[in-house]
Length: 69
Image (tube, rainbow, N blue to C red; front, side, top):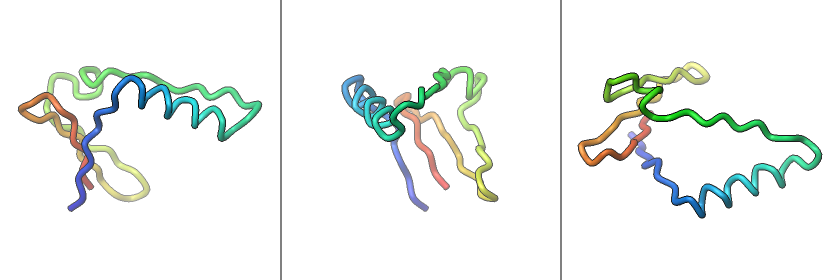
């Protein structure tokens, strides 16, 4: 089972946004922003279905997000 911790600093978020916009010149990237609270809706886990697989987004005791397949 692979695990990724989703925690980017503001500077890394800005770098990622610049790379996204640089990869598609002339096309405005409309990135959606969603709070983890709205995704989890009061729960501690969310199952995301993607290309036939299931991914679990979990909120840890330390208020970190972990995405596992």
